Length: 97
Image 1: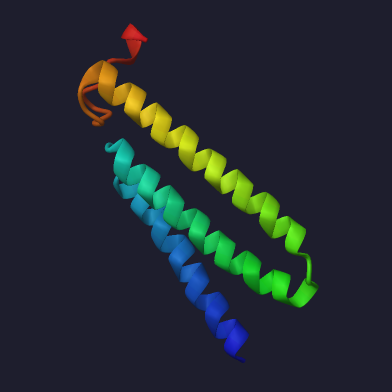
Image 2 (image 1 turned 60 degrees about the horizontal axis):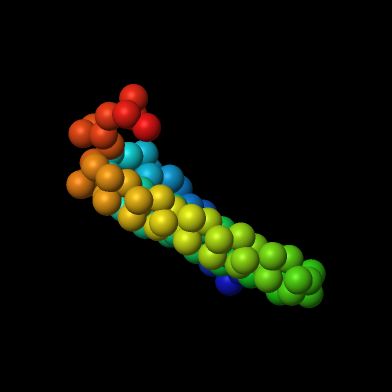
């Protein structure tokens, strides 16, 4: 019974992070933070499944993917801030790229 309760909480985290990603779409930094929150909720759901299946290698692959995604997002954010001066998508002119 407790496993289903945790699964419900992780689904609520998942939907809340999707809502935050849609709501803060104009700011790159806030959308990256909501994506990391999304990855955290998926990781917690994956941990519940891994406890049942005993497959830890899948969790390692997922963590490598999450780290690579976050580093790529932050490096793109730094490049965009250095070139345009802010992280606001409404002020960014993509024709110049």
